[in-house]
Amino acid sequence: MSRNVLYALVGALVVATAVLGYKVYQDNKEPQGLQINLGPGGVKIQNK
Image 1 (cartoon, rainbow, N blue to C red):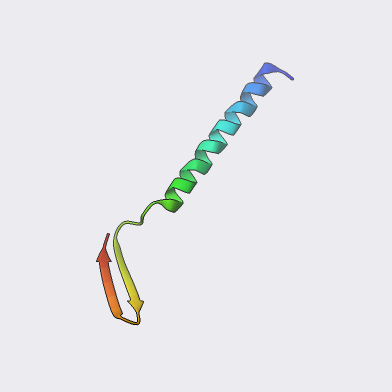
Image 2: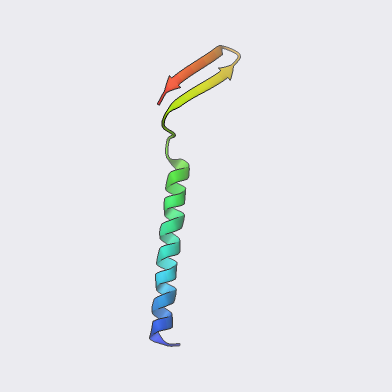
């Protein structure tokens, strides 16, 4: 295998890892803004 192909594969793996890590971070991040909950206790409005 050529060195350029090897470098391209390593680069693609680094980019894919970075993109997946950012997606996991965004999915787990606490949402900001106004949250409205409707439940048995009534309406709750929270500012986050």
